Amino acid sequence: MLNRKLKIGIVVGEVSGDTLGAKLIRRFSEQGIDAEFEGIGGPQMIAEGFKSYYPMDILSVMGIVEVLKDIKKLFAVRDGLVETWTKDPVDIFIGIDAPDFNLRLSKTIKQKQLPIKTVQYVSPSVWAWRQGRIHGIKASIDLVLCLFPFEKAFFKQWDVPAAFVGHPLASQLPLENPILDAQTELGLDPHQKYIALLPGSRRGEIERLGPLVLDAANILHQKHPDYTFLIPAINDARKQQIESLLATYPESLKAQIRLMENTSAESKIGRQVMNASNIIALASGTATLEAMLLHRPMVTFYKLHWLTYRIAKLLVKIPYFSLPNIIAGKKVIQELIQSAATPENLAAEIEKLMDIEAAQIQVMQHITMHKQLLSGNSEDPVTAVLALVQ
Image 1: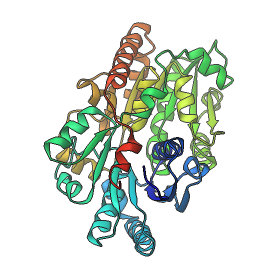
Image 2: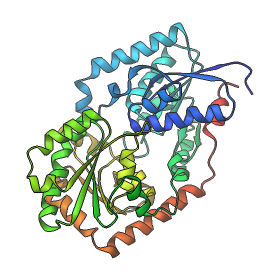
Image 3: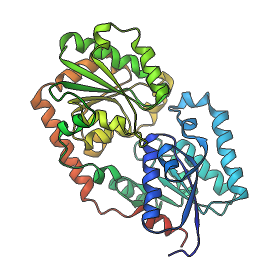
Image 4: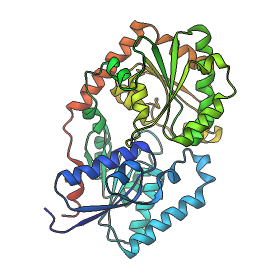
């Protein structure tokens, strides 16, 4: 046990990272470890006493081409953190997800020979694409905290220190998960049928994918007027953005759409909406794992800038984009990527899941994978991190 106060830097770039960061801070506290935390965090981390030098949204940029527009700003943020930690170093830097930013920050920390141990929490998807990054990770990261057991096995092949710490959601979300309880929590009519539409939580994602889900909803509404559509809005800015998109759609559709605004400090409206829905249509990302662990039938989609997609296609080493399919090693859920992500295709895939048997087959596969994630021999992330400085 350390006999001094630890200083830990953390950087997150989106809501899922903020959730992981807040849980990690709480775990340090629960284990009686005296530590202070600073860097870039969201509202959940700040509620735990975290000192954030920049707003979390500053890192919310997706894609290769899209990042180029904000590259100067991102470099300025990186350099600002390095300057702060050069004058007053933290003991450990933990980059939570956001690998393109955090790995560069760790590299700079090592290049400047700062006395800081570096950790990457949530393995970059090097096992999936851009495998050349493994050499940079080996040079700049002292420890990778992996959410899935196959990731630790991959890093072992490259002699990169890694610990399988499990996915916190796998143990947090119950195997028994009645939909009626979730609908009651949101004050929804349990006699209604609901379709969750999640185009993403970032401004750029809603710009790109909002029209796709709303056009699909319009198609479905004309054929299945008994379904209500639920769209979560993580904050007021996203709510206003979705409302401005909705303004161009027919009143009959708007009457069947409920925009669900976040009211929790934990930013959990997306999870609540998915949990209360009979079917989920969502942008590919970490939310697909959440939907899987909630045991709800789903279809996923994504569209990138055309050049980003062309580059990514050259670099991807695995056949699937979504975590449920990657974990299963086969197609469990339908993925509509790039040109396949049309309103017509999305509506058709959602319609297939209205069939009880088709939906139940997918749900049973979700439960099987949930049990697999619970059965792994995971390590405590706090213990793994502390081993670096003890």
